[in-house]
Length: 55
Image (cartoon, rainbow, N blue to C red; front, side, top):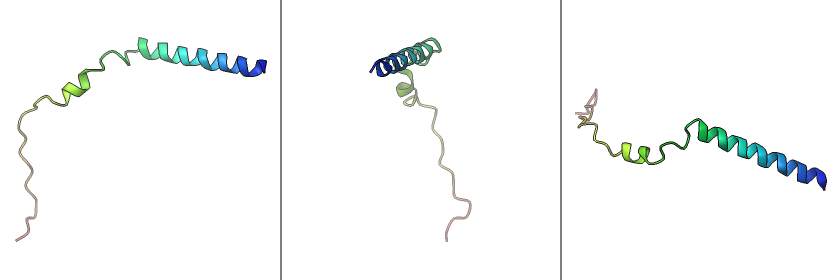
């Protein structure tokens, strides 16, 4: 029983350390940007014409 408690404490500490690493490395820095970035207009791109059009 004490082994399970020890293992769960180890898992909890490892999860906390992983979360702290993610925060410090900037993983959660800009969560709103990507959804607005895809809406930015990059200019009109012309569709490519097929190389061998069918007659």
